[in-house]
Image 1 (spheres, each protein chain N blue to C red):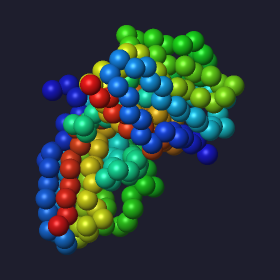
Image 2 (image 1 turned 180 degrees about the vertical axis):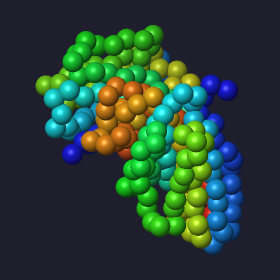
Image 3 (image 1 turned 135 degrees about the vertical axis):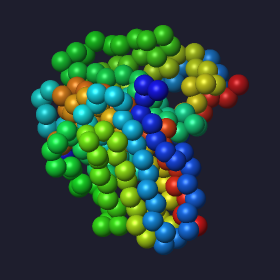
Length: 116
Length: 113
């Protein structure tokens, strides 16, 4: 499809397990973002990738969270040793440039993570 | 700091009523963009509009309209003749000094028949 694609749509995992969430951005978009949305909460920025530049990891909540982007396209968000407070919707987004420059960020449908 | 405030947490209206969602922002920039997104119950964030601070003309798209006023740092969103399908959480957003968007906490709109 033409939009941002995320998988899995839903994931239930046991506390302490590692999980990987995948994102396939819109073709041609050089910027890729991960956001988190906890139940009833707003949108929390996690990490940003732009082309070959070093990612902006300033929003990652702990060192259990990491992300990589291979070949400037697909990205994987990894959460190690999951905790119950990690339960949230993880939203991936992409854009052709910075929103500060007027570029629109387009979001995927999200990966709903439940840690039990 | 780049900040967005959506003071209305929840709004409930009856179908066909008009409703305005407020967005107030703070920015040190002289030129900037503002965005509105809609998040229906399905969860996906849907882009609605992007506005440049240069252009203070109201924007109208069907039943949706946006009122941008730099003097009051507001970018309000009005839905005319609301419909049940308008029920969603609406987010206003402002780019931060880096590469991302800072979102307000959202306004949950419930339209009942």
